Amino acid sequence: MKKKKDGKSKMPRWKKALITAGVIAAVAAVAVFVLFYSPLFKIRAIDVPEFEHYSESDVRQYLEKYMGKNGLRTVIGNSSASQSKSFFSMELVKSEEEIMFACPYLENVTVKFRMNGTLTVEAEERRESFLTEYCDTYIMCDSHGVVLETYSEENVPDDVPLVKGIALSGYKLGRSISDGKDKNTDVAIKICGLMAQLEMEGYIDIIDVSDYNNIYMFCAPSLTIRFGGPEDSGVKLSLLKSVMDDGVDGDSNATVTVADGKQVTFVKNAERED
Image (cartoon, rainbow, N blue to C red; front, top):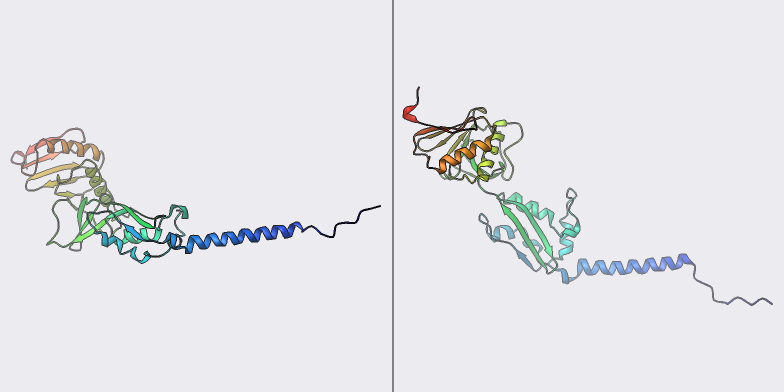
């Protein structure tokens, strides 16, 4: 005799899966709410290091609007489709770009949200490398040609070399003057970058790249340097630095030649033949 089946029927698998999915979705929703709306992740402080060219308030003003807001939501709102940085880096990408645009002396700016409720700012400062002229304005650039600030003739600084022979069609703060089309501009940037590496700040007053293959430098009041073409620029600058460290300077009343990149010749101006 067959036994009667139990009146209780088993729940179909699809229903169990549906209930499980619903529970997971509910837990995820609660987790999202806690993460993105909880005051636990509220931005409570902004940490800005000391910079030479900008005060703390100069940088903080671009981040103050986030005070009191949820840090994780702020990170998502600062994401950029053009950036490959992931959410897990906790970086405020758009704010980084905003700060670098407004503060051209700063580069490699990083703004991160920390789980302790602090926005931290890290950045490197660009260094002045050379000046050049554009429409009666003196433009200060770093060793990559990035424009840092501008001066009038009355307040132009004299502690970096003035580059002559560059033909600019315009400029923008925070952008390089090199467009890859003017070789004179590119060689000036290359030479000034090498001078920065060799710590030759204050050595040269004027660099004239008007003639690409016959570059001249000058130190006031009476030293002329025949640099030649751009080839072997690092070697030539090293030779020049060596003789200047030995005492050759603007008062030498001479012409120094390093054009061949092999040796230095020194001729007093009174001894030169016309």
